Figure (tube, rainbow, N blue to C red):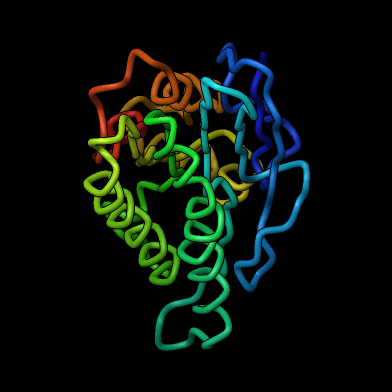
Length: 217
């Protein structure tokens, strides 16, 4: 089976995971309203659960990229809530319903999409950095809760990636100045990392926030 999810912010990237085989799968993809409520839709969160033993569950969550930038003295409460709701409440809404099926089968992969902004901060993005930082902390805490059940929980923290969001925020001069590799990353490079974390080969990696940023930090 080919598993795919769509980046909320770009028309160019449909793939997040490829080549993962799940027997007799039921698949659905969900996204979030600004209030953090999960809705069925063809992008953003991906969950695949097979209905018969062996019950395998893979969750790629929090791929919804939401910015609402302002320096904190000028940030409205709504700007703060909107970004926090999508990342933090979205993590709960997309992940919590999957945990018991994963625990029962003693296998699962939870992969959260974070950001370099959570590790370095970014001017005008206190809300976004806080949301992604909370996601990183939740990743580590949840990994401790479920590690003994064969479930791994990790986060991927991309830097500047060549998506619609990245292109709108960083021009070529900025990328040349900020990124030691002098280029933006490709969505396929992020996808390859996510695919590895969702595979059986990554079974001893959990509780990690893995950066993919061309050497920015």
